[in-house]
Amino acid sequence: MSMKFDLSLNDLGSLFPDDFTEEQIAKGKTIFLKQLASRTHKFYKGKMMTVPKAGLYGFNWFNVYYTPGVSMVSTTIRDDNETAYDLSNKGNFIGVVSDSTRVLGDGDCTPPGGLGVMEGKAFLMKYLGGVDAVALCIDNRDKDGNPDPDKIIDFVKMVQPSFGGINLEDISQPNCFKVLDTLREECDIPVWHDDAQGTGCVTLAGLLGALEVVGKKLGDVRIVFEGAGASNTTIARLIITAGGDPKKMVMFDSKGSLHTDREDIKADKRFYRKWELCQAMNPAKIKTREEAIKGADALIAVSRPGPGLIPQEWIRSMAKDPIVFACANPIPEIYPYEAKEAGAAVVATGRGDFPNQVNNSLGFPGILKGALLVRATKITDNMAVAAAKSLANFAKRKGVTPDYIIPTMDEADVFPEEAADVAMQAIKDGVARLDKTREQVLNEARTDIMEARALVQKLMDDGNIKQPPIELVEEALKIAIDQVT
Image 1: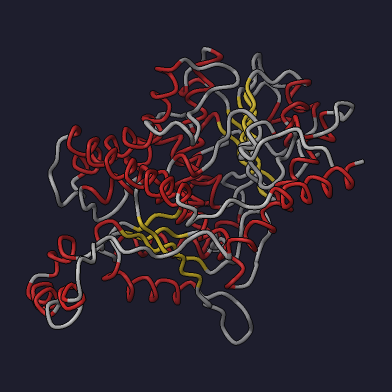
Image 2 (image 1 turned 135 degrees about the horizontal axis):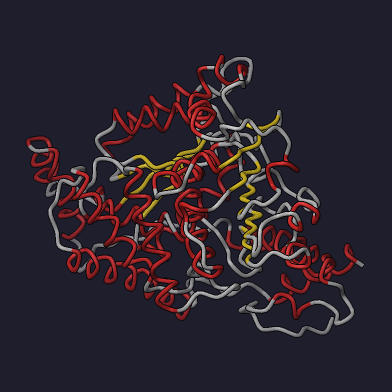
């Protein structure tokens, strides 16, 4: 078939026939990216490998790095465990831990089913944050197949001597709340739940940018949340921490709105985070989505894959210059073109093939890098808010627009800035074991990130990372066009 693109794939929309509608292009892009992902992952056999960071200059260097020389390293760390940060890769090493019970929008994918996502997190940590990471998908099911949160907790506690931090990922609620809150208090390394804190941080950053575009203040706006999972409940918590007014917020789960009459939530102690929000927001006990959305300034949806889950009528009933975040993956609750047709001033999704991608990849590489560089013992909510403000300020300096409310992943300068701001907040919050200046963290982060990018480019240039055959792209595009036509 005749191709109209190069391998960069920078303009996915241009791949499709000129007579395709916006809806066909949106559907086609989803199919294309999934098909191409399947083919390239098979071609590469995954996304990560282990590469030595120490040089080998002759035979006896084997004896330096292993026995007998390495005995000195072992006994030094034995006598002072903190020296592991100086004598091993612990200080720049993250374990990406998941039980794969809620993988993106696909639900329970079985323990090995999360490997694609966890390797993806490791890939982004290295390239965007200069942080080494490894995927650790674990089987925590009991004899009846039910996931046991205590097994995740025990696992992380056992492996923490090997890592500078832990990134929790794709753990279903309510287990994710117990796992994170327990490990944050009981581990001496930072434990971060990216589906919750990461999504909350980046969504807050995007909201701050969107409010800048429409000329509104965080404390003044009415916000409706569609979905009450780990992501949206943490988004709400961080917005409140940053100055949002919970009395002007209404959140909906599958059974209705959250408020103090929700005895089902109150009775289930596992959902204590949701009950906290029941007590804080929606004092008028608004019950219907239609009533809540009328006159609202912002709609933040992190529910289930669409499209068609958010009617255009909702958006038409919102306040002047409404903000719509439709962040379900892999397909947003409403396509951006539909939201804009209904009058949305700013639209964001979780996808990079639409403007305003609200994606955790803008958060966790810089946040974890900043935490590691000052050897933080935990990542506080204040640190997550500091990261959100760092991202928002970066976009503001460049000039926010309706299609640019938050930085993009290819803006390399954003991650060292974010790392530095997070590190400074860690010091301020009293959870940092090293005292560094902002300039020190900024320079160290920038150096590590540039070295990681240069290493990947060198491997590509030398052919050690091989370019995927163009036929893979052609096959994926043909399937996408055929399925949409």
